Length: 252
Ligand code: PEP
Image (cartoon, rainbow, N blue to C red; front, side, top):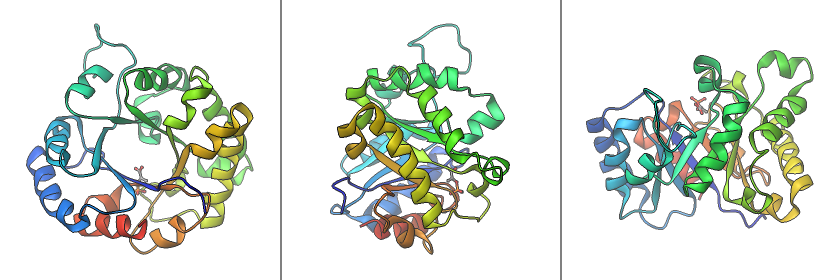
């Protein structure tokens, strides 16, 4: 058994107002209680971050943002910096989600700046990487993952690698109801861990590499029971408190 604590994160995407977030957490926090074994992270939209952080203050649930800019401040209309997130009570940030890469032009060049900027501000990055269906069918999965991980972590010091979380999120499995099989997820995560090992053997043992893509209460136990899979990033099934609580319990 690995020593790594499982991490289960909810990506709410562009769902839930401040009032919705309050309603969710008012029900969810008592459901999971205080002695849940997994680390739990909620990623609400920007406007609900402060409220969510306040609700989670006396719980063990942490709050993370879904994006940030790499600069501390400046003329970047519509953007939010790490320092602004810290002030809102946030201590982590999703970076490089495939929806940001696909719909909003997020590049590996920008991620190369964002990941160290987050770490410098004491925000834990949850860096998402993953291949398209065509890339998987073409046998390019490992090459794509290598390219993304190497580029996005190029300016992270080896000593800091273990502070991050990497989410393996095959794009063909996100929001589609098609989950990667536990073997597929383990193979890809094993590849990502080998890439980290090439840089630092100790970091490779400590870094959490989680799986995301149509995780549900029905498939969570099987995925989270695998040695290589250190947790889950959950989209659709995290919007309902009962279903997300079931996934958290499966990780416990
Ligand atoms: C995600 O958006 O990160 C995700 C994994 O979504 P879903 O669980 O809905 O596939």
